[in-house]
Image (cartoon, rainbow, N blue to C red; front, side, top):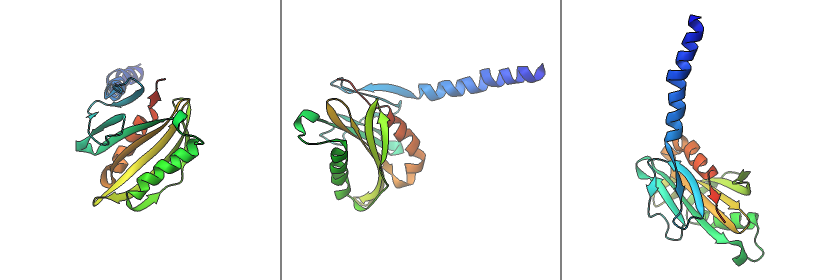
Length: 171
């Protein structure tokens, strides 16, 4: 009986608070135009990262950043997810010194096809690692770009990936 009480104690007073704390460390974010939703850490705020982006978020103290750039498919004659992904990846890589690109991974994000690359390179003297994701939905191609400096990337990678995976496009 003591063993079962001990298990109950652990579950109620140790594991539940940990689970709750992890869930409450995040908040929903909706873009100004209401078309993009993400789940982001509570300490993230809007930032000025890219003037063309619909979403610009991050937490500078931990070197965690994310932007979203969307393009209407109606304006992209002959484009598919592969072409969009390669063109936007090329734009990113061309701005880096000594880029290293990992092989693409095909994903499903927001019930839509997605292609993701991990890129490491230097920009303005800083080593940066990017998670470059293209999500194709019915009406748009969406570039979700998250990054951190190299020294913090391993500790930030899972969090950045979770935010990218939370992407939703509202029609």
